[in-house]
Image 1 (cartoon, rainbow, N blue to C red):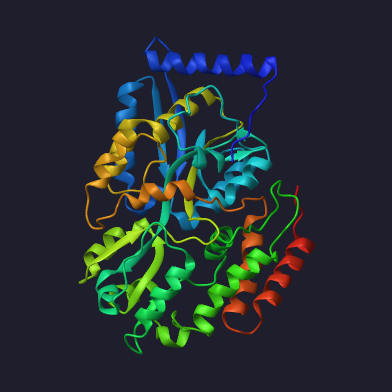
Image 2: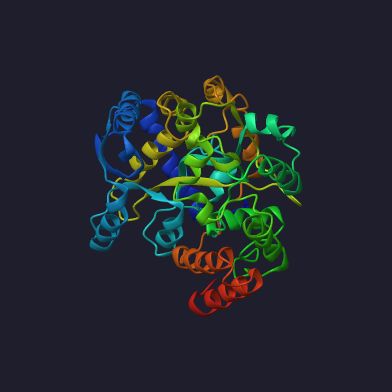
Length: 416
């Protein structure tokens, strides 16, 4: 959701001044040499070399800006960053995940990003990193979720392949037909967890918070209907396996074994399924109900509010997140997609198969829903997740579980 920002005269002057300094870097004028520090975790999974290539391309354009890059394992990253921020030793700019972003922004440790051209970035991705209409982070990448399906099982069941017009009712009918193929064959797998629930709730027209994020709406009727459908697929129709029926294997392994018809999962599964599946598979945009809604994952690049080189930091993270050169390097490496709008830059990505319908990755961008990011995001997601787990196992009814989550969140988390 985008909001119109009204700037005071002073804010406009400051923005113009910042833009001027950034343009000086871009024009290659005799600007003073600057060294900045950048910390990240997303490259720690084997993409350090890719990030280094990005920096080298950046440094060719901005030779007076040197970026010292520190890549920290994700398991240690946020503990490290909390310590550095508290101790006043945070880097000039750094990476944050969407779950921790609001807490950092609300605590005043991030600099508002102004005076740089953000027109090339996806608006939904940008909106995920705003607080009170102010931009405190730039989306460095994104991943989304599609419906993956086993074409061989669809053929055996005599069911048409999923289309962009599918609803959850269509999905259920196909799942039942595939389930009928055998005792050890299942139609669908989507666990009743927080991350899956908030998205399906949106498909039913629901949400976990009201529009201005001042009240919880966890047990709203639309949300109850969404969670009930998800639970019934395990406990009633059994198109989705129980934990016992899973036999200790993971959902991806079940799909790759050829015994699962459909699974909504992230585009990061492309390479694994290409190597691990000995059957034909493809993807489609996730089905909706009253509307479509699909997952959106992104990490932000932010600026330390206490940095002495904010202009240079803004130049670096803007180039890193939105430049065509940076995007091309990322795509060629098979890393997360850049959150940009330029389809020409992204065109090469569409040529890679499988899946045949890779265009669905971009079609689904029309239906992205951002998690309801609040300062106590982790606590909220944990409380809701625990209640949903009780509903999924049949220990509580769906209504009881969501009523419990509503009560617990209201009593422990302050909104607004």
